[in-house]
Length: 128
Image (cartoon, rainbow, N blue to C red; front, side, top):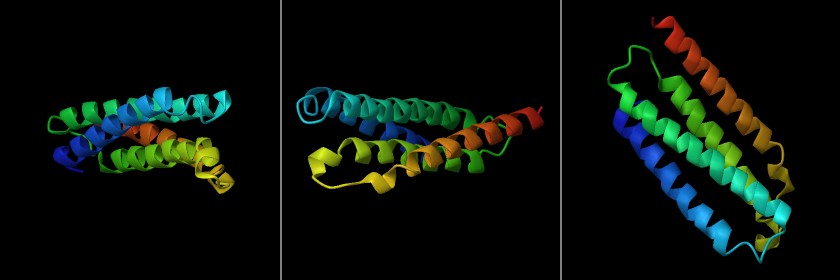
């Protein structure tokens, strides 16, 4: 993946995490349970962490000797699955519909994230 594309994903993840973080802190406090708000904030936190990680990976892309396409794609997909399934689950009450089908997607997204990071680690280790 090109540096520019990774930067665009990083910026999008960071911007949306800031927007959702503010939304959670101000608009959701009175609309969802405290437990669901904590879950929502977990999604925001993981999205922000991975947005910042993608930003760092983008800045290292031009200087790296390891291929980052697969791990970066897995980190993007994992973040989308993990964070956005949590958002959907936390906002079920607001949407007035059951989104319980998203429940299994959260750990799947987490697993994809873990695999992406492990592959990145192996690629970095092998490049030495």
